[in-house]
Image 1 (cartoon, rainbow, N blue to C red):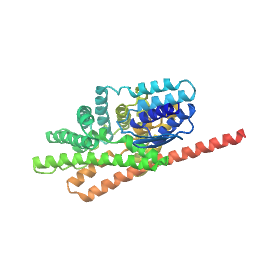
Image 2: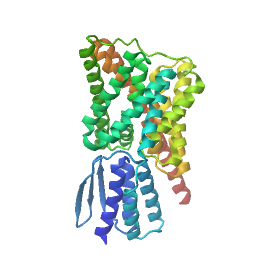
Image 3: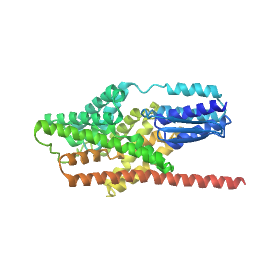
Image 4: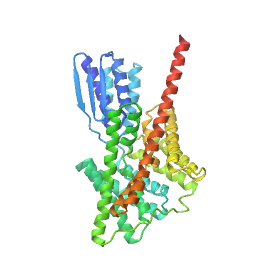
Length: 412
C-alpha cells in the first residue's frame, strides 16, 4: 500500500513539475495525497528537474525534464488533490485520473500559432509600434511559432531552438526593413516576445521567495540562458546581413506612434497580448480573460506612474509588478486555482524583452557604451520585477500567518 501511495504521489508531482508548477506547490500536492492515504512517513524533496521520495524502507529518485508549460494540467492535478483530501477518490481512482490528466492534449496548433501572432502584434503596440509595425510583427510571430511547432520542439535542443528562433525572426524583420516596411526596432522587439522565458523567470522568483534557493537560482539561470540564446540568434542575423549588404543596419531607436500609444489602444493591446500568451502557456480557455486583465492592470499601473507621476521606469515597474501580484492572487482565490497561471502571464508586459534586443544590437554594432547602458537598465527592470513579487509575497505570508495565529489563540 505504501509503495502504491508513493507512486501515486510521485506521479502527481511529476505531472506538475514537468508542466511548469513551482516547487512549493508540487511539494504541497504530493504531501496532501500521501497524508490522506495514511502514509505520513513519506518525505519529498523537489528540485527544478528532480523528485526525491523516501519513507522508512524505500527511497526513489526521479529525473523530471521540463516539457514546456501546460498549466491546465497543473490546475487539474491541484483540483484532484483537493478531491483526494475530501475523501472523494480511492487511490486507484486517483491514479487513473492522474494518468488521464497526463494524456490531456495541448491547445490546437493553429490556436497556438494565432496566439503567437496576436501576442507579437500586441507587444509591438506596447513598445510604441504603429499599425504597420504591428502587422509585420503579427506575421513574424505567426511564422515563428510555426517553426517552433514544426522544428524547434521536435528536432532541436532548447539552446539550438532558441538561437535558431531568434535568428529566424530577426532575419524576417530585417528583410521587411530592407523592403521598407515598418520600423525595425519596433517590429523586432514585438516579434521575439514569444521566445521570452516567462515560466522559468517567474517560477524562479517564487521559488526564491519560498526559500527554495537551489531551485530558484537554477530556474533563473535557465531563463538567463534562454535570453542569451535569443541574443545570440539576433546577433547572427545582424552579422549575416552585414556580410551580405556590406554595412551594419543603423537603427535610431524606437518610434512611438501617436495612435497606438493612446490609452485605449494600450489597454486593448496589453489585454490581448497577455491573453495570447495564456494560450502559449497552456492555460485553460476559461482563464484567458483573467490572465489578460492581470497583464492589463500591470501595464496600466506602469503607464500611470510614468505619464502622470513622472517616476522612473524602475519604480514604475516595481509597483506594476506588485499590482500584477495582487490581482493574480485575487483571481487565484476567486477561481480556486494556482496563482502561477495568472502571475506568469500577467508579468509579461513588464519583462524587459526590448532590453535584450537593444543590448544585443548595440554590442553587434560596436556601440559598447550604449550596450552597457541598455543592459544595465534591463537588469534594473528585472530586479524591480523580482523585488515587487517577492515583497508582496512576503507581506501576504506574514499577514496570513498573523491571521492564522490569531484564530488559533481565539479558539484556545
